Image (cartoon, rainbow, N blue to C red; front, side):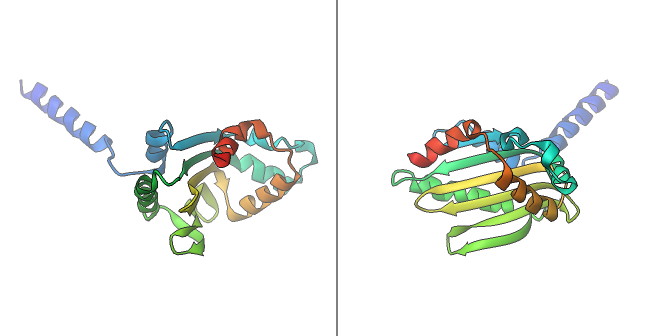
Length: 179
């Protein structure tokens, strides 16, 4: 009887400890990806459509450090400004968590963008770009990878300029922008 009670109590405690109620970007993406004012995209490195044989060693390393990109965008209009403010506040609150180290910030007031990351300077696990404008809405971009560093991101930008981006993967985002 005592063993059963002890086992039940231990199971309950483990369940409670494993249920992390802290907000995270991943949870935010999952909770909102199917809502009507949001659009969610998962983009693989294949979107870049580059000839890997023509890349330098540095460019190959940067491309190999990149796993995928998750994009969640909220399209604001005159009918959903209150929801826009609420959702934007949620994202800002998540990004205030100390695990997100802010790299840079652009803009002023309520409009602008920020770039943050999770990890150390030479082993970045995730870059987060958050851009918002009251008239248009906001977008959160998670760039996920292994052993990324700021140099890899800058090199990846140069690879982007040489790439033939597969626009088919971006169609849902294009349609959101046109609305």
